[in-house]
Image 1 (tube, rainbow, N blue to C red):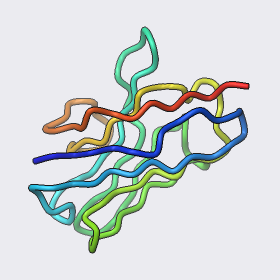
Image 2 (cartoon, one colour; image 1 turned 135 degrees about the vertical axis):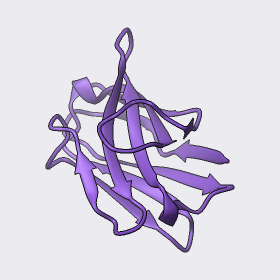
Image 3 (spheres, rainbow, N blue to C red; image 1 turned 90 degrees about the vertical axis):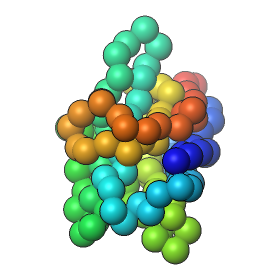
Length: 118
């Protein structure tokens, strides 16, 4: 299994970014795909998940209404659209195979850095 994240970068507060996660070695429709982040000096934080079977989505309260998780089955990819970004969203974002509401990950990628700063 391999998960490769992309799309991170430097953005001003209030801006948007779209993270991508390309999966190989597994079909995303049979697992929960999840985004987890880790801010500098802080513990891992679960951000969002999507159910591979029925596309049910789950969000942490801190991102609800601003972030949207989605998937493209044909590309075997998962995305995280992040809008109205805040400085507290600054973190290394990991794509992972794991259920909602947990930071225990069966597999994860190397991460993509998101920095929100003016």
